[in-house]
Image 1: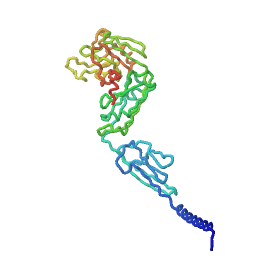
Image 2 (image 1 turned 180 degrees about the vertical axis):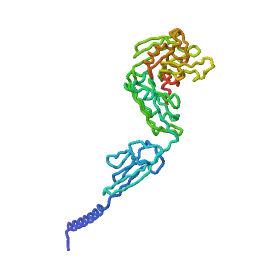
Image 3 (image 1 turned 30 degrees about the vertical axis):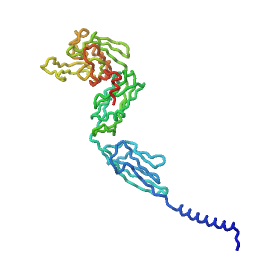
Image 4 (image 1 turned 120 degrees about the vertical axis):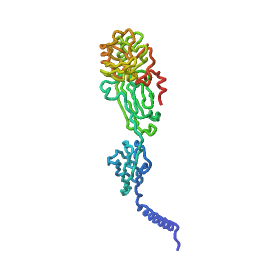
Length: 385
């Protein structure tokens, strides 16, 4: 029988459509793949405690995640927008094991639960970065314009460059500044000039988890805020035997004084007050001149402002009032009358400056508490890591 060509074509198309429909129906019946959960840092080498634990889900989304330490305390974390990644948001501890429990579901809401362990490094030693002056010393009174910012590490720092990257100073108003490593445990920060009165200073040492070198890691982060009070600068001139005081740049007082005798000259240059004490027993034996030696002394001294670590103070010296304003007779200190020393003690504090000139002595060493200002700005900048 003759069939029109068009009828044959239609029959073929209909058959092909039925085959395709059958194939498509078979594909739509396949179940979605199961979800998987992974933690890249799990069951491997110890990680730095600042590295986050990241839990990831593929072919599904995360429903429950818990990270706990050995005591069962939970570690804070956050889930991303599409619920495929969860990350810890707080630092971990050193030498610790953390258990990660996570559940994910696929498109059919079929759950998959997994448990992982993550361990952190165990440093041989840890070190703190202590701030100086200590917060309780300057709380409510502020610091003087000459006060350097200081971090003192409890262990030597070998990796200075890496550590210095984690040290931050913010000033308001903004002022330039640079770090200088006095030694391997003390790093100071100052600018080309004294701080402006009223400056707000924020310092940070973000060293937790940082390798300081030789098996030492940072124990914790440290931060401190300081406020610079009015400018108090005293100029001690050994040529005139006068101490001239300037408050915010204006001369407010001048008083007779006595610097170190020729055999014990006072260090020259800017000194910064690092300590105040109403009463101090000054004993020359602390630097090797003991009882029976020429030049030995042991005196109870009042109104003491320490200006160096080797025994230089501004203080009351009633025994030398007759020489004050006329001759240098001290063992290196700035001797004042009881009345004038009381005035200095009442007005000067930590970070205020005493600039010594014409003393006949060598410059104050940069390492002698706060000999920071003995260096030019160029020399100071060269002391960075």
